[in-house]
Length: 129
Image (spheres, rainbow, N blue to C red):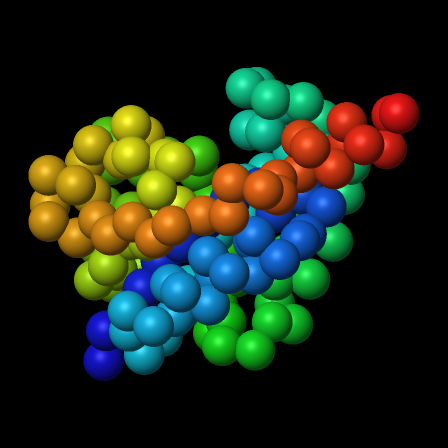
């Protein structure tokens, strides 16, 4: 059984998020989705609009998702994260290639195309207009 991992903020969940999750599932049999904590997101972006608990609940209810965890932004310096969760493949959008040095070095990193026409930041900008 291949265990696949993907992660994200998943704030203001949209079809771009759904697409990455669906594509990640195609790489294996068991899909673990990591959701970044409110504190981690605030450290590099902005405060999430939807709480981590609610974002986890949304992801938990997506067909094909087998497990949801609150996850570190990038487990780059800690191979034990991959061992603990028995991760065989780590999947991310192709706009994130610069972030995943360790899984790339481990040979488990895969990238999928993301939809450049939609992201949460664009949705927020539209709401402000």
